[in-house]
Length: 150
Length: 77
Image (cartoon, rainbow over the protein chains, first blue to last red):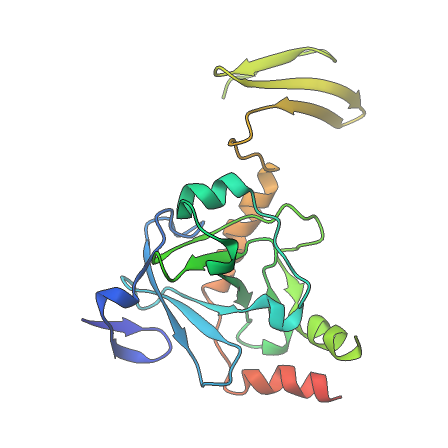
């Protein structure tokens, strides 16, 4: 099937590429089908693109690139409710980025609302991390610099 | 919204197995104790709201052409 995307225009995909978000994403609960698209091969930036609305897409990143020690504290029963029985190792961890158009250097990463995806089960959802140090708006460049000096 | 008056150490029961107790009242701050089964999700109300708001902002993000460079540049400093 063909769909329109925010970043790459029309692309071709198969049903197999689609990841179901049964609860949607908070504030966008009506959109429950997504695909993960990658930018250039080496880029840390990926798109979580709605299959049903070209304009709905989130920039996502593996937070461990910036913070190797980051581990979200999500409620085990919520993970189990969505994915059923699954090893945590089989879940892909993503965090959503906010990049202001006029000041991309002010980009922030949402460490409080991590997105977990099971490629095996084609399921995903946004969770809440109960660690108070995980903020919705963590400046990415501070993390990049912190990572450099560490 | 149902509004109930409670004193310290008084509680309300929600459904079969959730109890919310007023533990302490200090100025404009109320400390609540909550007894609930493990499979009930509990969050401060503003956290969920903050995530919704951030998602709305995030959905308007644009990937600048040299986004990767911004991070790499800072790193190479």
